[in-house]
Length: 368
Image 1 (tube, one colour):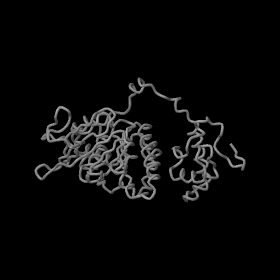
Image 2 (image 1 turned 180 degrees about the horizontal axis):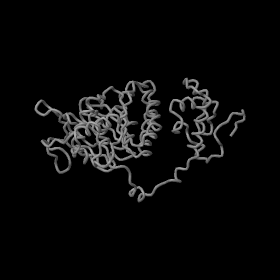
Image 3 (image 1 turned 45 degrees about the horizontal axis):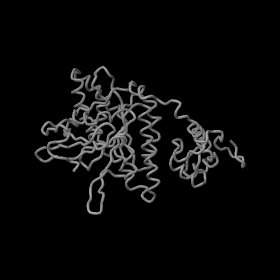
Image 4 (image 1 turned 60 degrees about the vertical axis):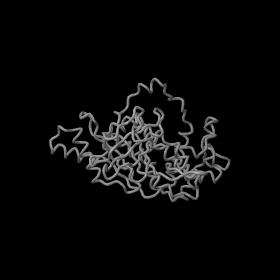
C-alpha cells in the first residue's frame, strides 16, 4: 500500500485482525524499534512505513538502512498475514509426535522431579541463592545432552550463553569426562580422549556483558542453530544478571524486553525441538509483617517459564555439596522435592537423605 504522502506502508488488504496488531507484539520488529515506532504514531501494523523504519534504524546506528528496513518490512507483512489456525495440531497428533530422545540427567531424583520439563519447546527456569548449584545444573544438562545414554546415538551439540563469567572450561571437562566414562565404558583411552575432545568442541559458549548484548545474542540464535541441527539444548546463565540493574528507569520497557526474550527462546525450543534452560537469582520480598525469598525480575518474568526448579544449598562440613531441588512450577506435577549432591563428577543422587512417599524430603519441608 502507498499512503497519501506516497510512502509505502504495510498492505491494508490484510485481514482486519492483522491490521489491528500492535507493532510491539510482532516478533519481526525488535522491542527498541517497536517502542520508537509507537512514539512516531506507528502503533498498528498497517501504520508502519519503510520511511519510519529507516528513521528509527538510523537513530539506533544500524548499518545498511535500505536493506535492513526493506527486509524488516517484508518480515512484518509475512508475520501479519500469517494464519495461525492453518497449521493447528490436534491433541492426538501432538501425542503421537516423536522428537529427539529425552534428556536424561545422571541424577535419577532430579530426572523424576522434572518429568517432561526438559521437552522441546519448554522453558525451564532454575533459581536459587549463590552456591546452590545453578551453574553446575546447567553444565550437567549440557553434558547429558551432548553424551546420550544410547552409545549408538551420535554426540550432540549445545549452546551456553554466559552472562556472569561463571563458565569454567576445566570444570566442564571434569563433568564430561566423568559422564563419558559412565555412558561409554567400553571406550579405550585413545578413543575416549578423542570423543571428549569432540564434546568440548561441540559446546558453543557465548559470553555477553550487558542486556543489549544478551538481547542481540538471543535474537541471532535462530540463524546460528539453523546451521547446526545437532544442537540439543540452549542454556542462559543467567537471565537476571543482565536485567536486574539495567533499564530500571523504564520498568515497562524492561518487562517488554524480557517478555520478548522469553518468547524468542520458547519459539527456538519449539522450532528446533530442544529444551531451553535459564537461571535466575533470588531476591527478598517484603510484606506488611514478613519477608521471604522469591525469584528475581518480578511478576512479569515469573509467568514466562513453563516450569521452575528451585535449588537450595544444604551442605555442611560433614556433607559437602548436598542440596535440595524443589519443583515449584509445573503443568504436570505438584510441588515435590529431592536431594542431590554436587561432586567432582557433577550432579548426582544423594542416597543419604530418603524421600517420603509424596516426593518430599524426610528432613523437612523447604517450602515452609
